[in-house]
Image (tube, rainbow, N blue to C red):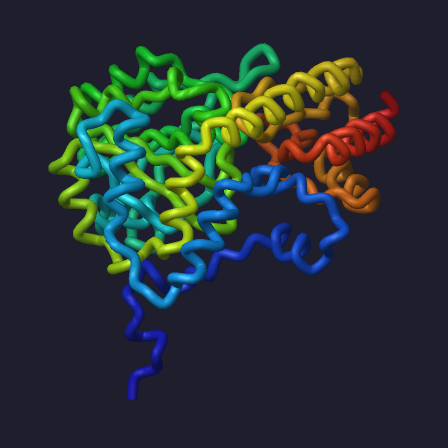
Length: 366
């Protein structure tokens, strides 16, 4: 009799469940400050809470296909209608559906690194091969390298994914580069999880009208502050959405998150409040920590910031350990470009931000 291990498809052998240890720690120790997972520090607005309560009382009913919220998303983005929108259980499920639709065993997916880890995780599950193209480190900054992305294309390439703004570097790629890549004709996925912090004027959604191969992904976990409800979506031409939707698990997005999402989209004041708090906090960190000698502060258009303290002579992992002792959970960033001072933070409440400034200054002696 064969052992169970022999029945798994080859590319799944050895793969493990994804666990966010820092999130597990935060739930186990609620007193710790959660400045590590790019969550929004502000709770849902009263309008969203009302929708959650209303539809919580209807949780005994299956949800519909989300035509109303999809129509609203299309309206916000200047698209024809719900036929241009597909919903997912967070943008992580959206990637799973896209990769399963495009990538088979041995096929290549190009990503620009450092970037969001879910691209890799879902790629490996379908047997794909990840091709990582590093950003360019120059003059103390990390720059997109679209020509290197194009240079990585091979006959096995099935898709290209670019985060815009990028996580964790926080910067945007030049708009012209998106056109250049789109014109190659390969499926081109643009991750806009954080675009609302800079405004939809920075979105590449208009490309979906000209290039059928362009797919935009978004989430309500960031600027809208609904990470716990798991609501994501993608925008694309109708034929693309029609085909991707064949991968949908029936009722993949529940009644409560669907209607809470619609309330969030309609609550423009709530979004404005979150964006203003975030962007003012970014400016505060730049001003307060930018004076520390040897600490490189990367400007961010997201709700997170990347730092490099290599030139202070101190390691990033030591800062993270120090912050944890002071009650703050931060996110690590692996050593890269021959430098070991990297660390990052998520924008928190005003109280949390003030504490983080104090902790960083104490650690660096600045």
